[in-house]
Image (cartoon, rainbow, N blue to C red; front, side):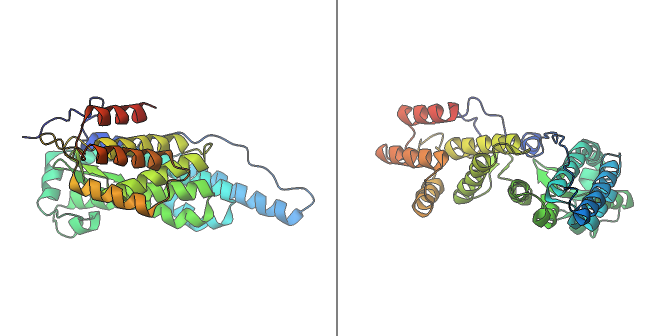
Length: 314
């Protein structure tokens, strides 16, 4: 029987709805004034005017219900014709539209008939196309096609099949947007490619866990005023907790023996040797933690629990 972690008094059980909600939490795009080009450069004025027309047309499409596919097609065709600032807002509004529509399309996956149809053919790593090619139910095929075309991908946890935002599609826009949104896209694409936690268990390696957390910390440090800083900071805090606590079904310290997981010990030790802790409070604390753990033979003690609580609380 799986036991609830004594080391995670404040943590939620990492279910499909819990982690997916975190990954897909929404932050509204902040309005901003688009600056006109200097009047001394007629060519620049003309270019800016054209980009504004493209931007305004796109905003009308992306904010209309049931127009995600059209907005995505328009963005692909025209993003190279606008400024990086405009492109950044266009990409973020597409993300917001996908988030707004997600609960609607999720509901269409929940009926038992849909779940059973997918479950009968599903294998680990299957995409919407993989499932579609193996089923005969036309209504489910149509649902999978629509979800894929609108920018979602198939995910599974706790025996359920459901859509999440496919952030890999945003990679094609990376060269046109501002640096902070480029970095944000990379972070979220990694998340949607493989969730860190499923069924309350850690499913990525400990070195990958640290690298992802470090990238999130660097984003917050480098882009404190980005439109997506709050969302990345929340994700960083969750990953920081995964690092020092583990998850309910993959605790960092074994519930019975109190010993640190061997893979965590090896992973953390190695990455601290390979990556500089300079300018990273997270890595610096991980280094202190591993030194303390070594002093206690890598077993959970009151001193170790206090160290973790003090860091996480601050």
